[in-house]
Image 1 (cartoon, helix red, strand yellow):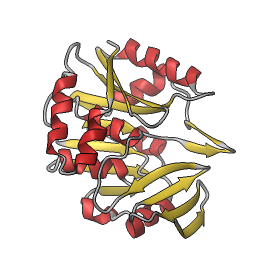
Image 2 (cartoon, one colour):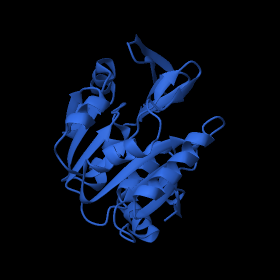
Image 3 (cartoon, helix red, strand yellow):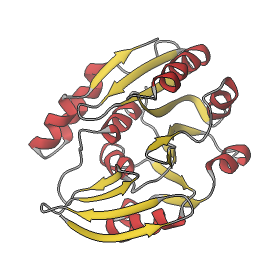
Image 4 (cartoon, one colour):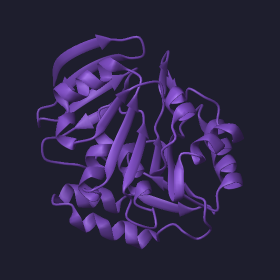
Length: 249
């Protein structure tokens, strides 16, 4: 393992590591916030679950907005499954954007990246998206936490960004100390949407919730699982098979 760079920004304390197999990780507060491999796409962690959650959209998404770019691990996966989708990422940390360009081949994904506070973007955005991904976590001491409470007002603001058949995907840590936020988010999303699913990865304590306004509008789990057949590497296909999905509404 080789240490490539350390960056202390206003928002993150990042260590960049390169593994023997060529994989690169961005570690923040002892947790990996982004990962890139020269040959493999899947990771066994939360990024895979976010990607799978997006594929529950009932149609063929044409536009996507991701709040929190990180190293673009999710968008790299989604570019494989949704090659024609217009992708926009909102990232408050300019150093993180630069690191993603330098180490994780960000420019090859052909996405629009805006160096902007997600709250400011949401307050002023007038464009509708087929997919809105909220993967906003900030480092606090030895742990991570969401920047805003999960309230009815927040969920309504997110919902306003969606096209009529649009889906909202939100990533939650579900380990020790995070259960209250996670369970509250489940209840809040169930109160405001007609369909709700959960996706859990095999190797991390995360759950991604995906919601749609219309009842019974999300794709079936077998349809999501079938899309793993498009992955070239056997390791990627195996990790895709290990994702678990739950119907909540």
